[in-house]
Image (cartoon, rainbow, N blue to C red; front, top):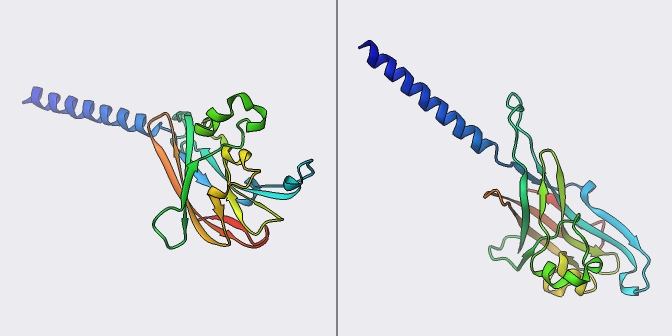
Length: 209
């Protein structure tokens, strides 16, 4: 009887140890938080030889952070999020079918005019980024010019369309964008945001839902 009790205790302890190890290994996977705020947007005024690019442009963006473990588990090391890529799907508000989608562009990756020898490859497959724990990366969503009532989805293709890709036009109104971030770690994260396109930059925004 004593041996049986000892065996059962040993079995339960082993099971707890295995389950704890599996839980920790799973929890060590990247934890990406997707959000937006006005500080990640880029509001620029350009003076260019190309008159169509002159003036004020505002780039509306989201940021992605790889969160560390909360206390009291902050001693557990979180994995780096490897080779993160984004997909953006745009919907008119209250509609269920996307009006268009595209592969996202991370703002920290090289701009197409600086890597013309790789342009076609980067349009088809934009550069991924790797996000370490407590690090952030910014992804472009859309751009609006002070000279245009419409806004335009922004990615590497935009450089071939004078920054206004009519395939990704956003006319005045309200939209939902679903952003999916996939990782080489085998997990993905998604979040939806509300977009409002006004006649002016001041009346245009992207916000968390």
